[in-house]
Amino acid sequence: MATTSIERRMTPIPRRTLLAGTAGLLLAPAALLAKTDPPTKPGPLVQVWKGPSCGCCVDWIKHLEAHGFRTQVQDTGNTDARLRLGVEARYGSCHTALVGGYAIEGHVPAREIQRLLKERPPAVGLAVPAMPVGAPGMDGPSYEGRKDPYDVLLLAKDGSSRVFQTYR
Image (cartoon, rainbow, N blue to C red; front, side, top):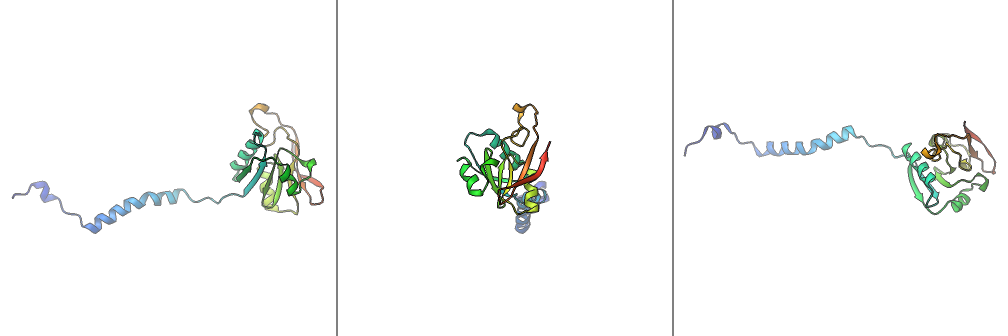
């Protein structure tokens, strides 16, 4: 039987070479992903208690997530959580949260929560009483860019408070 010119030019590939090349092709995408997509450190977990239909609370939660926080939400209202965490009713708002052992009441900016967790003062936590327009979660399109001045309060364990940050 005569061989053709194509058959004469083809040389068999050793099985080991074929297996090694196939394995390399299969592993290459994983290696590329590992180099271009490093694992990110998860941010602090914020547990949030809010009413089931509160839209501004949802917007505040999105604000936190956009700034690296992880969230766990309970749509059961926040009155019991506020009481349990030691936040007096006079500092109340529409949602209460817990992060790093601190209570967070109302529309506190993520920047101030990050500062609180960094400085770790002896305190109950932070509060933005009521619902000031312009605070995170109270800054949607329906407010037409309006911003009311407000203070972020540091809540002391004795029930007093002091200004932690002013927004004007």
